[in-house]
Image (cartoon, rainbow, N blue to C red):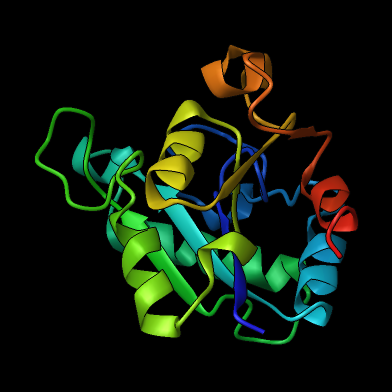
Amino acid sequence: MNRALFLDRDGTLIVDKVYLADPGGVEVIPGASEGLRRARALGFKLFLFTNQSGIGRGLHTIEDTCRVNARMEELLGLPPPVFDGTCIAPEAPGQPSAYRKPSPRFIQETLAEHGLDPAGCWMVGDSPADVQAALAAGIHAAAVRTGRRPPESIPQVAEGKVPVFEDFGAFAASLA
């Protein structure tokens, strides 16, 4: 199988606490663990793709983000490694950026590196940047309702081009 899920972190797998730097603040969204387990059982590779502008703004460090990610993986309770790869985009908006979503670069490079079929890949997230990165990379996009804003605020969702799920677990339950 050469299918994969590209997953946003804040608002998709964990509660979005805005510039989360303390691993003690990590709260896994209900259904995330089960959804990841199901996706793995179906043969999907899993990639974490997260914008962390708090680093670029000087609010926390890359090491803080890595500790938060490690705590998230611990709380997910899945055999390590949970993710086949991770992209942390540390730039703040307006800073020169290579990987900050909506850039499709991480997705494109990962598709090529792992020989993934774009038709079997999804980006799941809660923001316009998540959807835009997916569509620019030529993969499917899905939005979840567990973020800070309603997914209907994403233009492609409002236009009916991107499906919406209550949470990541509901998205994963739809996979075949």
